[in-house]
Image (cartoon, rainbow, N blue to C red):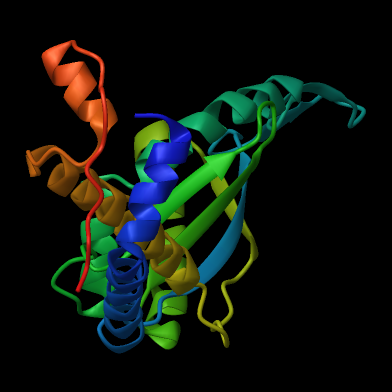
Length: 229
């Protein structure tokens, strides 16, 4: 089938081409605005600093420092590596269960938790998405505190500092309803074209002299005109 033939076929079934995408779009719009709840995102910035649990200083008789143990350049280098370890720690069952228990929740399954860091950076960005703006901010802040405590116990990281606490979001961050509506329209249009092509394939009637020539492999000698009364 050539492009011209396809366009002619679509023009013949123009009602289907218009109705099916509109029905799909209207259905998705109704579902998106009535059944999809607004979601809110709360963000927390964490700064990972590896340092010894305690520092000691040894002095000589004159008060000069002989030996000092505490944060060194190696600690800062280790912090970059530990930043990558903190990310799976944030989303671990231990941290999530402790956070849920602190907030009096059964679990954090209703929340989407993501954490990421840039290469070579000690900054970790924590994001929590939920349907309640107040509770979403509380979950984000409590997750940061719990991560700090668990990291100190598990990885000898004394400080996972919270650079900025999550504030209560005032505007929903999702869902992207227009995207879903656009996808529904495109899907409806594809379904309409597929249906029209299927109907055309199932239609076994001979509709032109060209089809006769293709089926019988003989030339057309003449045509009988259709006379309408």
